[in-house]
Length: 330
Image (cartoon, rainbow, N blue to C red; front, side):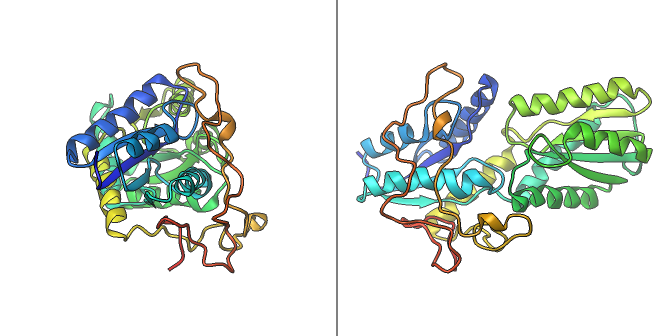
């Protein structure tokens, strides 16, 4: 039995077995880097083990403080609503355990270096030698209904564009946001660049990454005079692992505040005014545990409605989560 802190890595989840394997590989690397800390991992939706299972394991091992770390690049609905709902529910049921919600990976110099490496790998493996001034970089984000999260992809793109010296760069998304990858590629073909590098700014593989590569292949087949190069996603790059370790350290030291200045739940963001002040509840319960093992979802004792902590996104409140959760106002 332990009486010190532990870490729960909270993944999105996928119906793709390879995506689950890659996420589990990340958790393996973190355990190797932090052998003194008990680490469990689980998924929000589409796969098992679910997050509740991992939390229960840490509880059974005697954890008195659990750092819950989002295994996600940016803070959209899952980080702002679904994960806090899971964590707060568990904390409310276990008042003897201190729950700390770490922040998302966000825009980080380590992740930019990892992205640079993936793009340079693609350049080295390309068939032709084409200078960057004649190359267009297409960075592909996941796409959400949160403009704050979507805009982070644009910032990453701009920093890679200027930092690596490409002739041009554009952003597209695998879903939800505009433009989609196929639409974005059709538009940039008209700019006249000799090479287009398609870089999925994703942590792991999965259905969406395969869709991105399929679109790239279709564009390449239809446009043989333009070289379409597919770069790898981040996966288990050493800099990504280092970034996760930084987030764990921040959470343990109490310096893991999220950037809430443009959160659509705190501020009236153009086009999302109806979300301002919305209650913080999960919306993922119908797909918890469904996925790669074929098991049906169940509620596993998790309550997805309001609870006595009364968390909400009302800008007039203190707007913080109990148990030192990160999404709070200074």
